[in-house]
Length: 483
Image (cartoon, rainbow, N blue to C red; front, side):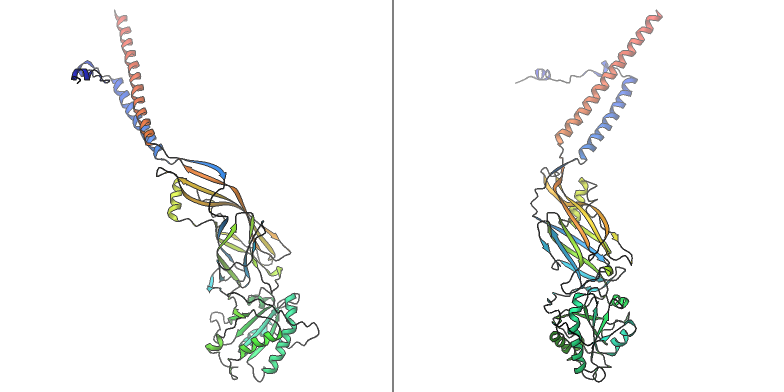
């Protein structure tokens, strides 16, 4: 057992009696200065310990989120009808998907981007197998040629008005013309407009009656519209809501469709409104026509992680489009890549990288509008996409906090002889940006604090000793001069 005397011999911090010490003004000043320095340096060390430190590296993208990339979009086209709006994707590997509908929703909007009614949902359209009669000889014009000044008169006079909106230069319109005129002749013989008056077949040349076709939102030729008198009149504008016919276009199919329209109507229906049964008569070949000429497209698509294109355009296998009348102006409300990140995770990521997210939605809110008279313009967006992954080490071990795709965008307007489109060129980088949070050791923080305290105390002691000895020397010199 050690005695207390022997135990005291290992004391590294031997005490000097207070009576043997001497206080000085220089020592007091240095003590205050040392205390302030310790406090300042401790605060700086604590701030550095609490601050987030990250390191950034660029590595090969070896993520395991699959070979497909999700694209979320919400884009409004004030001059593209939902009737023909198509979302297509293709890539350099030869993959091509046309008119994606499963994950895409369409809403009719007006030219001021205001929504008009519920979701535009025409359902799967029947495939038109018969585009007309195989007849190329002369034929009579038995359908009534309607113009802007008498269109409303006919639509209010006949319970059923079926109009063929066509263009003389259109291949499909010319295929339809013989069967349309023959159908008009048959229906006129069966349901004389003067004696019966339940149905009338008419036609409108959209190259002449441009405004009339625009008012009825005609963008593809030929477009067969079914106008019903009475209960479907829209109060705010006085125009008739109508349906589009998408069935076969040979004479037999057209006659059957017209007969189905007339069948529910009583003979005395010329001056009457239609009851619900006739107004709501359904047929697989008929769908509601768009209420306006604009469309908002929202939803998501999946594309392969290779260079490719996302294309939005007017598309139909049985209609023609006039490029000079197509306007692909649009406003991008939302366009992002990858999985949607929750706000909580995103705020956590912002703690690490305040500038994160600046390029996630770079095109959001951007408007690409071409003026009237300058319709035949393709709007192209060139996007370079890179994946960013954030690794957090806050809990002592590294884990993936967030992964998102940022992109740069360059846009251009190009005049085209083809049907104009809105095209997004996608270039995905094979590299990814890896941002890692660097964890800091608490023992390292304590070591630095001790170093600060000891270092400041030691330096202050050295300075105090130098000043004290200097003052003593100066006093001795002064005393030597006096004697």
